[in-house]
Length: 74
Image 1 (cartoon, rainbow, N blue to C red):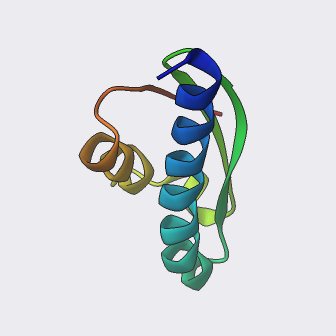
Image 2 (cartoon, one colour):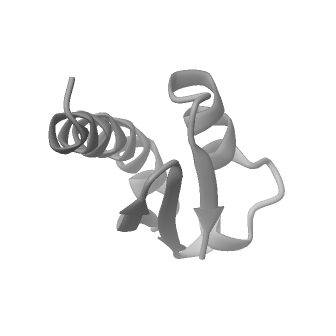
């Protein structure tokens, strides 16, 4: 698979995880959004009550579904 296709697949998977997270985070008046993808680094911004949450739901969701990435939270 060429690099462009791999990046598009990674972006699709990230958006899928975010979609599922946001459905849950909405109940806490929060959301997460994709900022950037550079290689294995995926930058995600969280906003609302969940931004300072200690449970780490966003990190856990990405670790479970995309263990091959380096998640950077803003």
